[in-house]
Length: 251
Image (cartoon, rainbow, N blue to C red; front, side, top):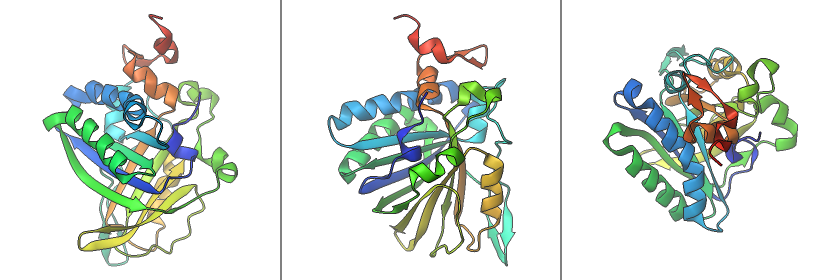
């Protein structure tokens, strides 16, 4: 098994980060899962030979609906609203994360547009940030922190969790976890946008509550391995369970 490219690879020059929520999620969760599973393949078809990646993540409720009897490890749940100083920090939001990165910003937008069409009226885009450049952690140093390697969760090996924080200023908090850090400009708002990866969502929650700068928005997502993501598209769910080898059936 292998992780999705955006977990360990350095971002390209241009990146696009989107968060969606969905109407009637319990009724359409499986359709959303299949669209997410198709996304890497769609990206490669549209991008042709351009260097790029797309990373797909699922929010806590979405993943629970997709895999009711095989939940993600480590207490995967929404971050509650908290106070940092005299400012309120909202709970984490988002049923799906899409993280595009390439050397061509138009390619990112084209990929995002195609996926948005598949979501149709069911999907509501609640956050969209275009960024350039950025800083990222050394893959070789942080791989063991980022990826699940637990004999109790063999189906989820090489998967990860990701938290997002959008700040209205520069965040000076220490971040010892693998992360991608960007400066963004969104209309009248600007600041830092940080994606942090870890194999344990509780550690991400503790990190979020330790931040010095209160975040304007937060998100928490499960990033299934590429194999696990593919199994969702190829009928990998049977009676609420995952079957990694489902992608080979019918060949």
